[in-house]
Amino acid sequence: MNDLFSGKLFATDPFEPTAAAARARLAAVRPSEYARTRNHLGGAVTRLSPYLTHGFITLPETLAAVLARGPLDVQHKFVYELGWRAFFHHVWRHRGVAIFDSLHAGPLPDDAYARTLPADIREARTGVPVIDAAVRTLYASGYLHNHARMWLASYVVHLRRVHWRAGADWLYGHLLDGDLASNHLSWQWVAGTGSSKPYLFNAENVARYAPPAQHGAGTALDTDYGTLDRIARGGPLPGAEPAASDGRIAATAEPGLSSQGEVEGTTAALPPAPSAAMFAGRDVWLVHPWSLRDAPSDLPADALHIGLWLDDFHRQWPWSAARWRFTSARMAALTSAQYRGDASAWREALASARSVQGWRDPHLGDSFDGFDLQPPAPLFAEPGTCCASFSQFWNRTTRGVQRASELLPAGG
Ligand SMILES: Cc1cc2nc3c(=O)[nH]c(=O)nc-3n(C[C@H](O)[C@H](O)[C@H](O)COP(=O)(O)OP(=O)(O)OC[C@H]3O[C@@H](n4cnc5c(N)ncnc54)[C@H](O)[C@@H]3O)c2cc1C
Image (cartoon, rainbow, N blue to C red):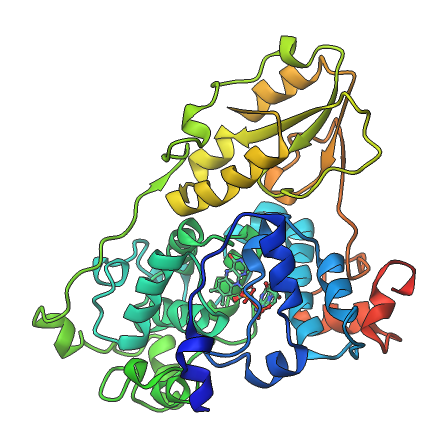
């Protein structure tokens, strides 16, 4: 267990915005170690999520790279977790914008929850060590371990009675891997508005999976599940932690979010809008922040490789400077020009092109439906109707499958 908290495993190496960095992470995946340790904050998780969210790699490529080094049963934990990502996207495809509201009633009515995230959470000074550490890690690295995300979300919703949507919007903005389906539906899963019961955790659970400095003895977490359940269902909330209320914890500044990119060389410096003259009569390969991978080799040699930033998306969903840097650096490597504009301006400009191709992604909405944007190959066959739970999705998509390689095109 000590290994799990050693400097080596606990290191927060940076995310480089290159294809080589994504390949290196794939090469570093250790499926058995992953299955054994993934719940520990220092466990052998892959840190592939920024690369998956931004389309450096797809789910089938991820699995194929791992299987190239040895076979896995379809029920292996690693394959199962890729299934969660696919499930959340399946729900998004079927439910659309409904995922931004509670999918069903939770333990309390929506209006029982506060709509803004309290400053002590945003500033990492709640006095609950595992929560404050998560917020500081989030701001410093743009990444959080899955267990830290679950604890943070559960604390916000159930112990502070803040609406899941306030927490989800805030977390999304600061993550490098922020994915509207995985993020907002995970918050709903924790809140109990997308799952059958609220997700609760206590100090004993934290002590099992987090390093000693983050244990919660003596805090509001130091209680039994019956008490936590009563709080989640409307019982009296715990008071402020002593360490937080006497001002012993210094505030951590929340990094700003921007709807336009705010660092040199990113969208802020780009021409404001594309125009029809730029694309007239040309073949266009469209690269957007969710498709940051190499273009197919069969494009016309003189095709324009154009980077697309969607102003209307980012007005609603601003990003951290780190995420702008991560995505725009990769975009610059893949394109000869980048522009930014509203979807309507893009549609008008692209209408003059001879052809427009690229990858489809749900973050684009239906704005580009008239162009030839193809969905990336799925890893799990679409079940058709919307599955009510992950287990239903998993059972339907893996029925009759034994080896994970059977999920890949042509059976791997
Ligand atoms: C409150 C909350 C918010 C979240 N927000 C996001 C988000 O914005 N973007 C995002 O990609 N994931 C999100 N997740 C899911 C999960 O926490 C991350 O995908 C995972 O921690 C990423 O780290 P990793 O690549 O090292 O994961 P690993 O454990 O190494 O897993 C490998 C890959 O499998 C997928 N995966 C693993 N666990 C999950 C899961 N529980 N749900 C969905 N996919 C999973 C991811 O694509 C991940 O990259 C959220 C989870 C919670 C509880």
